[in-house]
Length: 534
Image (cartoon, rainbow, N blue to C red):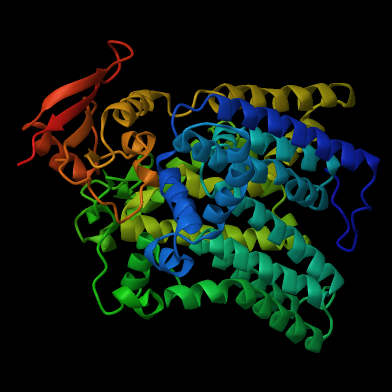
């Protein structure tokens, strides 16, 4: 690709840009609609967010914010989407809230193409902006995360918006735009605690501007931009911090802060106490009260041992493996070539420099999580995939330019881009969580056959969710004269990192099977035990 002049600015948007974005939004909508329609059960993490949203609707907000480990913006988004959705459909609350969570994420995923196209257009050109945005929507890690009830859709939308706005703010030297960057950074923090790194990254970009007189020449304007950035971030983030009495309630974040001797930044309720490791908390559901550890991801062997100083080699190796999985392997090679061929792009434009800073911060955060908590997932690589999709596409165009004749260049570009998308789409369009169908059926059976006063012990949360226990008030009175039963939900598959599982198995030995589900002989059976009151 031809190297742009450093002072060159992209042309204003025209009709072709609007058409390109509308096409991207249409394709994205079709992909996410397909995935939502082919979702077997809610993502297990989404059950916690759905409970959060339900409590925000029915309980005191201050108490709810202090009690939950996650920031409130995504649950608020679920609640906002669920209100009109529940007025349209007459479904059980579990299904209406599940689809509300998925629709909230998918809507953010569709809107994500706007800042992504703009970033690619500024970095390279319209073609790279279009195909880079499309590639990200088609890769399994991106498309599936943007269709599930997870925070990734909203979080990536905010990060991409910050990258775009920071570029415009630097180019224009706009104090107002830096304030908007701060507002969006505060919103990113209210989505995920690590969203605060976007404010720090923008501050680092501003510091670099002090050495680039061609970007922001006035020292006083730099000071004004920095003050505007901080005021914007504080305006959105500080009310939540004041409400919880610290920076975050999230278990893994607080545990990392403690390991880094920053426990004074965690919630007052746990200040001065040793934080319990994430895996030692009770994951699973007992009557809708639950804590969750991830089901999918890489865990370090013997991760319950407190030997975090020996985790670095494992963290680095796992980082590389998860990065390859996130790129679906086939897109990693062109991305690497793109990083190398266009390495100068990271410093030529503020948008490229902002991406580089965010990449560095994200890598440090993920590696710290691997070292301290012994856990890493390909979902942690989404930011790398988002920013690198443009470099992967640009590398394909550059490859065709360098090694193909003019007559074959266009054909080569189309074949390589089609190859990437064709390789990615089959995995992206697979039914989500299909192996968990038995837990949904067990939950529906419990919804019909268990009394609301009965106790449900569910190490995996799905059955308790579909039995409507997620939507039960925290203080629930047992009808007079009724003796509650206890139901235990198990399956015959092998599971690790599920401490409640041993407790559930111990209870199940005392009971008898009252429901059994198995779709085929190759799949695990899901069993519901009724345990007599002891």
